[in-house]
Image (cartoon, rainbow, N blue to C red; front, side):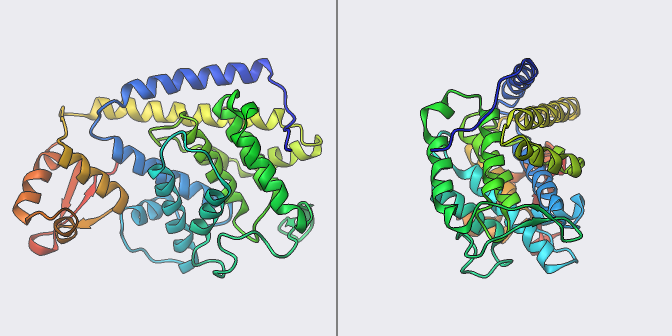
Length: 340
C-alpha cells in the first residue's frame, strides 16, 4: 500500500488558506457570467502550451491558442499533434463529473489521449514494456524509475490511495501534488509521463471540487521556471521521498495561478459592457464554440438542426455583447469565441 511521507508546515497551511480564499472569490464571481467559456478556453490553451513546452515543444502560446480555435498553423507535425492531444485531454477532464473516482482506466485513457499519433498504437494507453531512464541533455542519468515489473503494482497502490480514506481527508492541493509526484516517479509509460502526471494533478483538483470552473493554468507556473520544477521533483527523491517541500511548491503554484485568474476576471468585469443572460440554446452554442474553436454556420446547422436564419438570431446578441466573433461572409461565415 502506498503511504506518502510529508508533514503539514505552517507555510503550507498559510498557502492553502490563501488558495481557499482566492478560490472562494473566483467561485462567487463566475456565477452565470457569459464569458466563462472563453476564460476556460484561454486557461486550456495556457495549460497545454505550458505542459508541452516543459517537454520541449516549441510552439508559442499564440500558435497553441490558434489550434484551440480550430485554425491551421505551420510548424512541426509532431508539435502540433502534441498540442491537439493536450487540448483533447483537457476537454475530456472538463466533460467528467466532479467527484467521480479516478481509476486505472482513466489514467490509461489520459495517456492514450496525450500520445495519440506520437507513439505506436501498442504503446499509447499502455504501461511500458522496457525499462526507462531519466537523463539530462548530455545523456547523464538523473533518475532510474522502479523496475519494469513493479509498474502495475505501484500504479494500483497509488490509485487505491487516491480512492481511500486517507487522501479524502486531505486538501485537494495536497492530493494533487502527491499524485503528480508519485506518477512521474513511477514513470509507468514509455513516453509522456510528465504530461500525464500534470494532467492527473489537474484532474484531481477538478474531481475533488477545487477547480470546478476549469480556469486554473497551474502548469504555466511550472513552465516559467522549468529548472526549479525539475529540481523540486528531484529534491523530494533525494529526501527519501519526503514530499513536504514539493507539496509547498505546488501550493505556491496554485496560489499564483489563482491570483492570475482573479486578475483576469477583474479585468474582464471592468471591460464588460453588456449584461447578458444567456438562453439555454445560447449556452449550448457557447459550449460548442469553446470545444470546437472556429465553427462554420453549416456545422452549427448540422449539430443543432437549425436554419441559418435561426442561427443568426441566436448568435446576434452574443456578437453584440462582444462574446462571439463573426468572420467571413455568406456561406463562408464562421464563428469563434472572442479572445480574452
